[in-house]
Image (cartoon, rainbow, N blue to C red):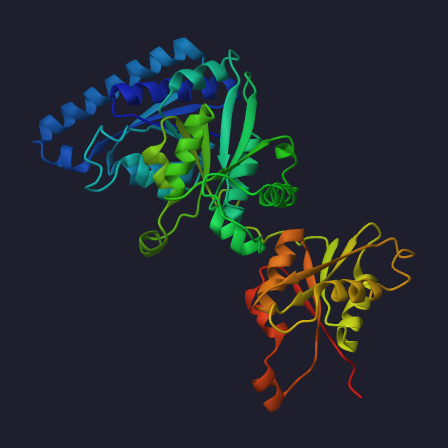
Length: 437
């Protein structure tokens, strides 16, 4: 595979080429240096001047290659083309199935990027292969030469594109070795709402219960990336733009590189949803790797989780008892079944009475099945919301609940808690009906 490096012969581009050559030498990959003569620059010249410009750029590129070969021993070839810089580089990376594309990342004050955006930002949105935007070439060169460890910060949001980026980051290697950190930006009010955690909400720190839950959620989500098992998780309570917070975390943690995933959204989606990867490219003060979601081929379906922890809503009716027995039958040895009764604060019986009744609902043969049964009484204004929040709090793999089978007018008047849970839940929901007479 090839490492592709674009250069415009500026000082930042020279540093990017130095880093690219060092990585090519360390990885045993050939390096292709590319200079793109911008269409607007070349087409405005008379034919003789355009040819002279082409020849001069070819010579300049070869001089750079000779210098880099001598410094790193890397195999380097050169090419000068005409076109639009980011379009040409993306096309060449696609055709070559490049391992990595390397370009310089300009600082925020280096150009009037607010007009059309920088080449680096446009490539971050369009790249079909991992992209390295170089701000600190020295750390990369020393890492490639075995003179230092590279501190790598992988930014995640537990999406599939973030999983692709995390897996790629965890497999980064060079003679210097890597220290992997994983960062997740957290908005405390949203987590309090998602988990149903009562009490005051601090904007600058996380409730210990929430922090523990997020840590456990990450370990479960990243279980299929064993290389990340020992990574330190940085949970950053923050408000404002996610990209600005990721860049700030990278600076605070002293990261030599930040790794972000890219959804490769189209123009309309970027306008509506924004682009965190392009924002990190714009704001970070260190090197940035951008890994597209499609890098490993077509986006893979999320792995099907083993159903080890099941939440069963209980209302002490025959249907809910049937759902409980179904959950016990499904749970594997060593698994957990969590019984939940949601109290309506205005109409439910006293909590102590419900706790005793809930304990009595635990089947006597649960211990024989080697399934751990726990129970909880929660108070919520909306039963379906309380169920979904409790499932998130315990890290449930699925919800197993009964359906009373109401139809017609009864369903319209009384509603369906099962239907409401289905609308709100983001994890599997198994509905257990009563047998028909």
